[in-house]
Image: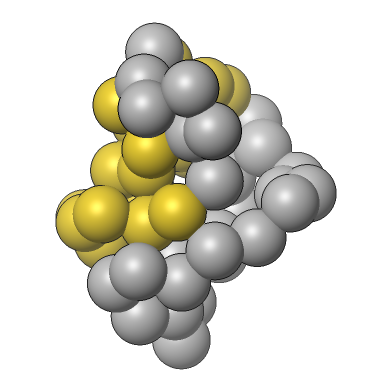
Length: 49
């Protein structure tokens, strides 16, 4: 997954390996992250694709 837009500390927009855009919600997942940052596992509360 790669971050495309940081909405706030708890919401980010990302693109997964299949190039599907997703809205990710979770406690502090956007905190101190930058655009184009990639990661494999995230503690999510909700995932909207």
